[in-house]
Image 1 (cartoon, one colour):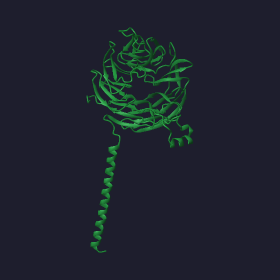
Image 2 (cartoon, one colour; image 1 turned 60 degrees about the vertical axis):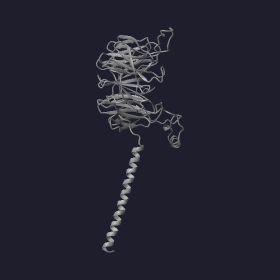
Image 3 (cartoon, one colour; image 1 turned 90 degrees about the horizontal axis):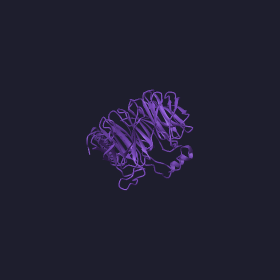
Image 4 (tube, helix red, strand yellow; image 1 turned 30 degrees about the vertical axis):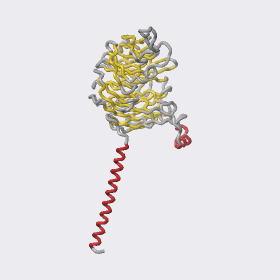
Length: 447
């Protein structure tokens, strides 16, 4: 081969390489473009989304370490897929994912300083102590009672647990380092027994409030000394939310009898949404019942301490499933204000007084309104089940999930059930699209 033939050969070889490289580049661009076209784009305002294999049961925003602590699973007892996950805040990546066992998690108490997390289970006296920094299970516990709710008490660094033992209601102090029960105190109750509520803390007054059948127990936070039992006769106690500035506790009611209609003197409905107000420091009853016309019971509730306004939604079982509005009450007078229209039936409400925002979540999306004027400011088309917390940047931790739907087990489900009977689902194969999302809501009007 002479010099001219070698030169031609090299040119042809170089041309083939160029053609091949161009084709490869075009294929990469086409594949990348197709991906961007078909991928599920996050709605405006959604910073991060972390998909999970099963339903979110409880989530907690650890503001100190900017992480979300999540208990998730099938949502039914005696299932093998209940787990504890630690998710990095705005990145949405799973740092730790720990298997917990067959019982369905019911409550979670978090000590952000030590990283210890107490997990209790539904209809069980067992509990688990987890280190959320390492993802390690510290120990499994057997408690001398069945817990109803838990709370981390910053005054003592321990967990406060409301529970039942031998048909008695009690509150207990539990050491989050060792898991040992330090003290228990009997709670008072009256009327038919149906359970005690979770502890609610007034941090500035150093008080803990726990509902029980027929009333509210007000305890001193450090010693759990019972200060007062406040009987409530206008309905069954449900949720408690505390204004840490005025030390007023708002206790929502279910089965609160509706008043007669003015025109016919007949009862307009079986029940009405209502709450009572008590002094969180002394337990003194301030308002025996504040009624919210148009509701059957209070579902979700949020409180603006700055504006002195509770924001509530109707409870679906008692009220109207198509009631797409949030009711507003002037806490000073008990007078209802103009309701706020929302994109769906609100199942969760959060209030950020720093931004003067009321945020309601529903299957229609997230709606943000001004707490002062009641003006709807923003809407994010992301169906949510629950708003779990707000960080210092105004980011909201929310969970989303499709409704559970029975489905016929597939081939791999049958193989899995055959090889590992403990891992088989109970009766049906439940599939989920659950996720934990970080959402940033702009306080400026964007609608």
